[in-house]
Image 1 (cartoon, rainbow, N blue to C red):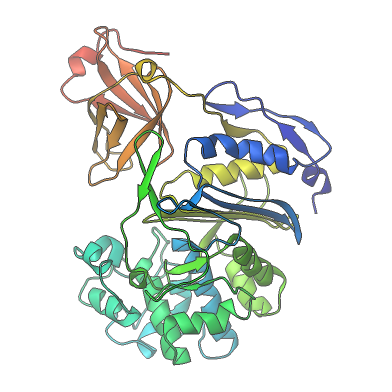
Image 2 (cartoon, rainbow, N blue to C red):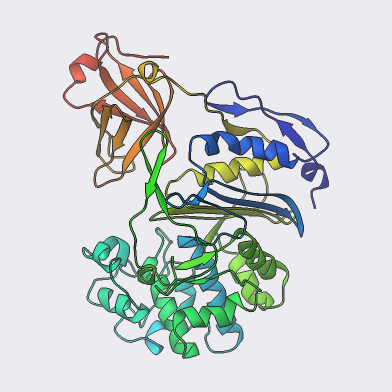
Length: 465
């Protein structure tokens, strides 16, 4: 246990909208008031409706809920609010499969074709490759043109696997995992059904939720959930949220249909790490992964081993981080669809470790000062969407960044021509030419040139501070 790190406290004085915090440290961990202060700019800008739990061992370091579970009814989020957790579901699916391995009903080397027929490359793909997400299966989310339609009706694992049966494999199994394999998790859900003789939701209750004491968790198979349930929301305008479209979560079995609370998420993690529900060999297989089983492992950011799991789905986004050196868990479950949570949680981890971190400190910026930029900006082949064009649109409601194929990301003004993309949580700034017109959009580390304005940019372009 890193006692010296565990007892460090840092107070960050953020003097700009997004600034590196270099801390003056004492010999105590941040208290709940200081941790709560870190979250406030996210809360005040409507970017953190949800619940946060931080535990070291079995001791609570911080626990608080923020915002509304249902904006239409004015119902507040609570620590026992049930959130859909999208890809964090994969951790539970993996646990169920490992328990079947321990029971002798499966092995890591079992081939898919021994259980389910008609799967592309099924005679080559093993349970291990499904767990490690390097099966190379075609993916429903990415490869099916009718995927959005599937979300509009009730689905079963078997029906979803039938949808990809005629598609060519994405790659040969056993290579490097290069994407989240949603259909691979759908297939694991079907295998769980076949090996237990139960519908997926009931099988998960028997294999995971009941044994781990997770009585506020389950799989959403389109049946009523009950209890305190968060409604999903999406960002709109500079500060606002809107209700997310309703989907059938049964279309995401194995990869995204679970719901849970922050306390139940911790019960799973604590039981997985310290309990006796898994064999040492199964636990080791999941802990030794670099990128698989629903999480990834890295060691550079904090100089120690860290496990992370992240998710985003219609109306929801969450992030969990586990630091095994002193058994610290940071869990954030939110009913907002955006990509801010990895940054939020990673910086909380740095705060707890007494390391420099990015403190988001928002001060309201008058619309006139922020500017109202417009234009189409073309990015290079190394951009997130290669050679894509992003469009800036400004009106009385603020400025929006339109991504090709979506989303329409509202921008939060940070200063003159400086913004934060509320969806992808990335800084964007405008470079203007000598005539005052936008000629470049700097988005994170990338630069997009305004369409057909290369000549204007070649002159006296300068960033407005």
